[in-house]
Image 1: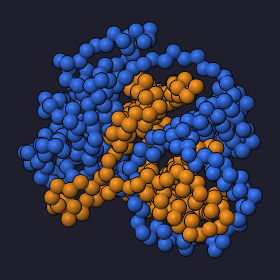
Image 2: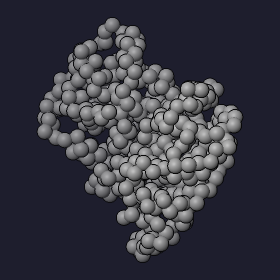
Image 3: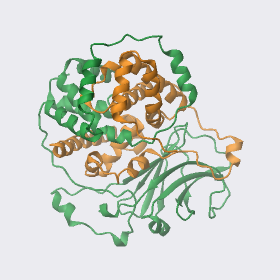
Image 4: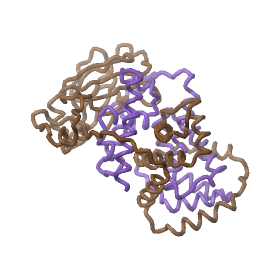
Length: 195
Length: 277
C-alpha cells in the first residue's frame, strides 16, 4: 500500500506544537511519520518486537525533547529518521549479547503455496530509487564497488566492522579501510556538488 | 584521543552517522558533540547526506498496539518550551515556500561552511558498477573510466543484494563476479535444522511470471556457492526482475515454479546498461 510522503511544513508545525505540549499534534505527528520510522527500524533491527520498542522510544523522545529539533539543520523527517536510526543502533548494541532466535518454519508455512513474506530488501530498495537520481546516489556510484557495498551494508543493515568482515570473509582491517575510504571519497564528491 | 584534529573529527563524525562507531567510543564521541560546534556541524552534514538513503526505505505501518503502548508510557504532560517554539515558528513561516529539497541543499551548504576545512587530497577513482549483469558479449570496456583515473581499479565482485529471512539472522549476500559470468552467494547467520529440505534460489520475472531455478543455496554460515549466470537472466535484465528463495524437499527437482514456500525475496533488480564497465 503506498504511503503519502509527509508534508515537510506540516511536520515542522506539528513538532512546534508538541514542544508546547499539544497531545493532538503529537498524535498527528505519529500518524504522519511513524510508517517511515518503523520501516527503517524494521530494516535495521529485523525483529518486529524490537522495532516497536524502538519506535516507542523515538516518539517518547520526540514528546520530551522536541525542542531539540532545529529546522535550519534540515527537514523534520530527516531529524525523525535520524533519531530512529540512532535508537536502532543503540538497541542493537544493548541486545548484542542476547541469543538469536533461529528460524523455525511452521508446518503451515511449509505447506503454503507461493507466498512472498519479505518486503523489498535494502540493496534492492535503494537501487530501485536510483532512477530518482540525487546527489548522494550519484556520488555513491563513483565509489569502488567494494566501498559502496560496505557503506550500504553498514548504513542500511546496521553491521559493525567485525560483523561485516565475517559476512564478507575479509580481514577486519580491510573492512575498516573500505568504510573509511568510501566515506572520504563520498565527502569529497558531496562537497564538490553542493558548492 | 585528540578530538581537535579536524581530520579525525571528520572521520569519526562520518562513522558515527553510518553507525560503525559503537560502544564506549560512540558515547565518548557524543560527549564531544555536546561541546564542539564544528564536530556537530560535521555530523549534521552527514545526517543530511544520508537522509536520502534513509527516506528511500519503504514505509511500513506499525501495529496498532504500538500507539497504545506508547500512550501508556507517556508522562501525562511535558514541560512546554515556550522560549524555543516562537523562534522556530518564525523561521518556519519564512520558509513556507521553500521545498524540502532546497532546504536540504541550503542546510548542507551552511554545514559545509561551518565545518573546519582540512581538505583531504584524495585521488578519486570513478569506478562504476552495474547492479546486474549486462551480457558479456555486449560489454564495452570503456576508455573513459581509464581516462578518468590513472589508477586501474582492481576487479572486485559487484554487490547485488542481501537476501534476508525476516525475523532471523539468516541471510545470503549475493554478488556478481567481475566478469559478470558468475553469481556468488555467501551464507551468514544461524541456520535452522532444515531436515529433508533445501533452499533454492530463483530468478523471477514479474512481467512474464517466468521463474528460473538458479541453484541450491549454501546452508552453513560462511559457506558460499558460485552459480553460472543463465542466459535467461540476460533476457530479463532490462525489464526488472526478482530473486527469491524457496524451501524445497531435498529430493525435488526444480520445475517452472517453486513448489515450497518462498522464505524471502528481493525485487526491483534492474540492469544499468548505461553504467556498464
